[in-house]
Image (tube, rainbow, N blue to C red):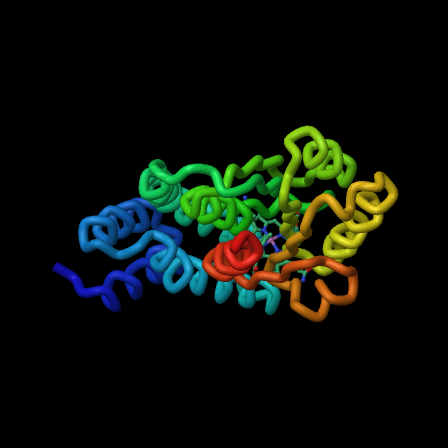
Length: 216
Ligand code: B12
């Protein structure tokens, strides 16, 4: 049986080689070895995806490569996320989080991971999907009496729409009813401070810790 470091190395390799069969196998092997799915995703798959993203930016890889890598990562995630959900099935709801990828942005993988991590931590998560119009966050937050409105932005040009959430919540007179959380690869604490978001989190574990702190 492979040890943890070997499993994580194989997870990276599966993505770098666009191999969905290998990605599925290593997801199953990690579960059998008792590795937490979030750990395999963060340390294995996400690291490989980030590296491919850099090669894409440098022009040494093209969009079809990224799509093939996404297929491989998705194949593993389809195995891992349901397992993560089962781990949290027993906990009762600690609060409601409305989450979505911001208007103009279709990147969904990171947002799905954060949504699942929050679910297993005991939150009721309403996932609006990707490319979510700003007004939908506000309407849904009101409808479900959300405690937190969370948005994901993966592109510098879509980050600005996270500011529009702040503006529209204010305009609707609803801003004081909720906390806002922002995340995504280009998003930083500095950006959160600049737009007036309450929480910035770097990854799924950080998001859970910071929301837990809010509810304590
Ligand atoms: C996969 C990918 C795609 C896939 C997306 C598939 C899908 N269903 O999501 C496809 C191929 C479709 C795609 C399309 C495009 N992409 Co793209 N893509 C990526 C890539 C390689 C990886 C993203 C990813 O899934 N990472 C893995 C996950 C696990 O990590 P993550 O998303 O960062 O999420 C983590 C954290 O950020 C955080 N987080 C994420 N969301 C949230 C939300 C909250 C509330 C919190 C607290 C935390 C949090 O927690 C997550 C878990 O740790 C990135 C490169 C990169 N470095 O990010 C480029 C990248 C984001 N894409 C990019 C671009 C330009 C595009 C396209 C415009 C390409 C094109 N010319 O068509 C289109 C976008 C069209 C659109 N309107 O949205 C650029 C953006 C550049 C920029 N700075 O603005 C990047 C950075 C690539 C690059 N280096 O050039 N892409």
